[in-house]
Amino acid sequence: MRFAVGRNIARPTIGDAAAGALLLVGLALCVAVHVLLPGGAANLAIASFGLAALIGLWQPSRALVVIAAVVLALIVAALIYTQVRDIGLGGPAVAFVGTLIMAVVGIVASEAIRRVYRRVTEYQRINDALTPIDAATGALKASFGRDRLRSEVARAFRYQRSFSLLIGRPFDYRGEVDRRGPEGAEASFNDAVRLIASRLRNTDIISLEPDRAFAIILTETTAEGGEYAGQHLQSALRSEGQMDMRFGLVQFPDDGVTEDRLVSEAYDALTFAEMANMPMASRRELLAGTGAL
Image 1 (cartoon, rainbow, N blue to C red):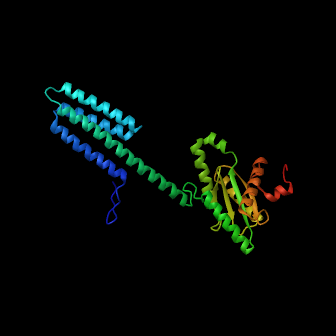
Image 2 (tube, helix red, strand yellow):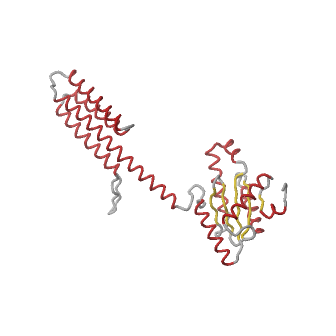
Image 3 (cartoon, rainbow, N blue to C red):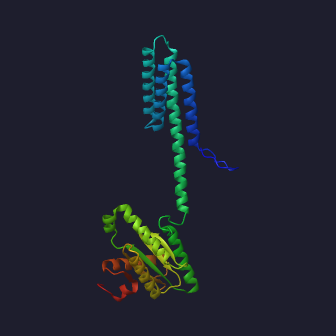
């Protein structure tokens, strides 16, 4: 259980309560058997209590827990009755009932802890959905990035302004995985995105896209300015020894007036840049028949 200093005291979770109840019941039963049973029988009973509680906490299934607890309780009761002379029926009965009680307590604690885990997992999922920034890269998450792109389209349309959109992606991510391993390649990608974000203007926006791609909104920027920005980012990546990236470039409103159209055209330009082994390609180059088109 966690306690905060001062007036703010953290409320115990259901899992805390279950663990505390399990501890108290276990201690009470241990004291009782030490009073009621001889030393050897008491130790055997206490060991069975602990095993029954663990089986209840593990809980592969309730039916299996009940069967296992009954069998264990019968075995322990029989051992106490046959090994401890002149103990009568009271000692085995205490061990039998105590073992079943601890199994039930384990089941209750297991259910409570699972309930807490589900609540915590749901809270983390909701918190992750409401948090716009990806912690690993510092970029906006994909859904928030699309919302910003939609807002930028509306703003540019209202004020009759242009802006550019860059879609970037590692050129040979599979090769990076082969060279660095999956974790090393992921870390290298995150480093590259952080570097790119650090070279953008305060008004520019970078967000993640599916399949380890990212989008960059260059506000108040024409295609010519977008090309310059892309070249600047490519140079920064090379100078810092980061992984090789390819870019696709489009401009609002020349290449599209909706966010979906702009993203689609930018991906087409990116695919062309990858196929032609070019650092960057724009939609105007595709229309002009540059390269192999």
